[in-house]
Image (tube, rainbow, N blue to C red; front, top):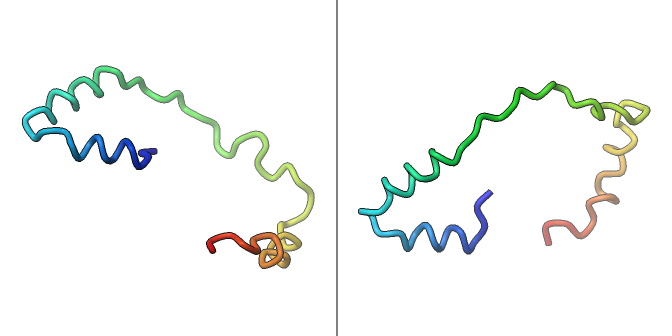
Length: 65
C-alpha cells in the first residue's frame, strides 16, 4: 500500500525515468505462493456473527470522526 510520502515521491519522478523504475520494480517482484482460501482461522469463532452485527454501532463508536 502506498503511503502519503510514497505518493509524493512517485509524483516527483520525472517522466523520462518512469520506465526504468518500472523495469527495476518488475525485476524485484516474486510470484506469490498460492494461498489456501479460506484461511485456517476463518470462522474460528462460534456463532454466525449476528451478535457482532447487532453491536456494530457500539463497537464502531468514534470511528470515522
